Image (cartoon, rainbow, N blue to C red; front, side, top):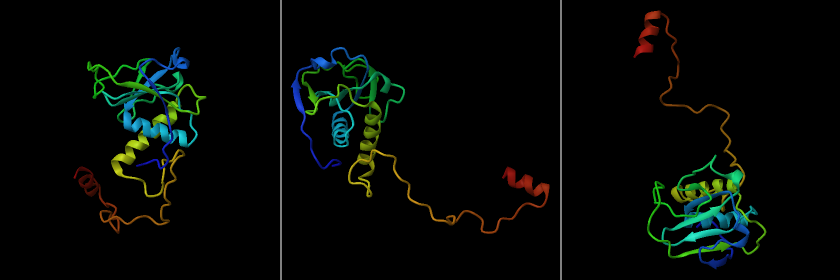
Length: 184
């Protein structure tokens, strides 16, 4: 829907984290699987650092390890949750653990390698934009997700006329008139 090019991922079956993540001390973003994978694919296309992601098919969640400096100060965006060093699935409302066993979990690894962790700031922005595009439809001005700040459309040089604004403002002449207008 949003990204036109599908990039390949390497798959590692099982819950065991890749060796380079064994000492990860940062946060883990838990987001809906489809939104997270779409966001990460967009980030890869645009050159942002993307690391491994743990996918849980039972709960339809993705667990994305991010750096310790990118964490909880800015989360959660809509439909995501940031947790400290855990990849345990939570309930759909984020209120607590979901006790259904996670029987189908695997890691997705970008084949280009190099990055251990995903850029949390870019992930936050991309997740919010993916959710917005899903809710409101694709932006008519951009074919893919923009990574830079959107450029506002230019405003016309004259003020917009409003049907509710008086065309000829009449300032009150007496204090009683001023009091009446203020209280009514």
